[in-house]
Amino acid sequence: MKRENVYAAVIGGGAAGLMCAIHAAEKHPEKRVVIIEKADRVGKKLLVTGNGRCNLSHIEADAESYHGEGSQAVINILFKKYSADRVQEEFRALGLLTHDDIEGRVYPLSNQASSVLDVLRMKLSALNVEELCGEQIQGLQKSAKGYEIYTAEGRICAEKVVIATGGRSDYAGRESGSRELLRMLGLSTVKATPSLSPVKVKSEVTRSLKGVRALARVSLIQNGQTVRSERGELQFAEGALSGICVFNLSREANRLGGEIAVNLLPDYDENTVMKELTARVQRTCAAQEIFIGMFHKAVGLALLKASGIKPSTLCKDISDKEIKSLSRHITDWRFPCEINRDFRKAQVTAGGVSLSEIDPHTFESRKHKGLYLIGEALDIDGDCGGYNLQFAFASGMCAGDSL
Image (cartoon, rainbow, N blue to C red):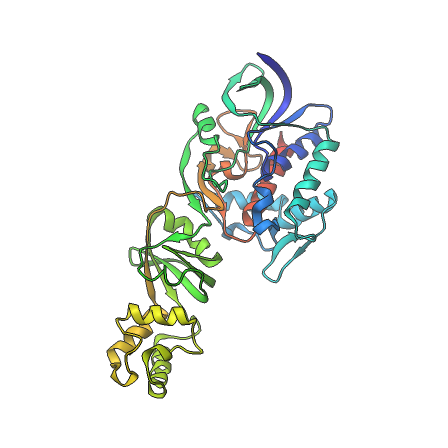
C-alpha cells in the first residue's frame, strides 16, 4: 500500500477546506499540505452557489444570523478576527474584486462563481498545495505522530487533519462521508436536517399556484407560537412554499413541522383588508373580479376556493361572513408543514459536530489534539444571503492559521 507523509491533510475541497489549506500553507511554506477530495475536482458546490454568481459573504454578518446550540458565542469569537470585512480583504489580496448589492450580499465583480474558485486554486498552486481528487476516505485513526488516513489509493500519514467535508446538501442529497468519519473519532453530533430549502406543505391549492410569486410576510407557527417571521418574495411550488423568506424558516420547519402563516398584504391589518374587500364587492359583478389589480389571477382564484366561494358567484350574494373569511386568508393563510428529510433541494445542512466539541478560538477538537473541524461539518448554519460561505471562509482561515 502506497504511503505518504504530510504535515496537514484537509479532508474536503469545498469553500472552507480550500481557504484553510491556503492559510495552513502560508503559515508553513516549508511543509506539505494536501487537500483530499472525493469528487473529480475541488469546489464543485462553490460553482453553483448564488445561482452561479457565488454570494460569498454578507456585509452585516453577525451572530444573530446563525443557528445551532452555542453558535452565537462561537460566531462572536470568530468574527472578532475573521469578520466579513476581513474575508473581503482576503479575496482582494487573492485578486478578486467584489461588490455588494442593496441587501448587503457580497458577490464577485464578475458575477461568476468560477472567479472565486479560480483565485483560490491559483493561490493553492502558488503555495504548492496538492489536490488529491477522486479519493474516498475509507478509514481515519490516530497514530503516534498524528493521524493515518486510509483511501483506496493508499495511506496518508498526517501530523494535522482538518475535516471540512461539509454536510449532505450537495444538490444530489448524497451523504458526504463526514458523518462516518466523525463516528470513527467518537465525536458527538447533532442530527442532520436540510436547511435553506423549500418547505413541503399539505395544501390543495399549491398545484394551481405553481410558479406564482407574491410579496408576503411568512411566519412559522409551532405549538401556537410564532417561531420566526420573514418578509420577501414568496414562491409557490407544487406541494411546497419557496423563496428566500421561506428558506429562512426551513431549518425549524423541516425539523419539527408546524404551520406557515402567509400574509399577502403585510402592510395592511385584517380590518383594513375587510374594508377594501367590502368596497370591491360593491363595485364588481362576479367574485372572480374582486382581486383584479390586487393579486395574480391564480392567487385570487385560490383565495376564493380556500374560502368556499365559487368564482362565478355574484358579488351581491357574497355574505359578510365570506368577506371575513377572505380577509383572514389574505392576512393569515395557513399551510401545514411536513417534516422533511430530503436534502436534494437544500442549500445547507443544519446539524453536525456539537460546538461544545471544539475550541472556538482555533476550531481544534477538544478530544483530539491536531484535529480541526470547520464549515458544515459543525452544527452551525446561517440564514440565506452569503452567511454560510462567510462562516465557511472564516472558519477555514481560523483553523488554517491555528494549525
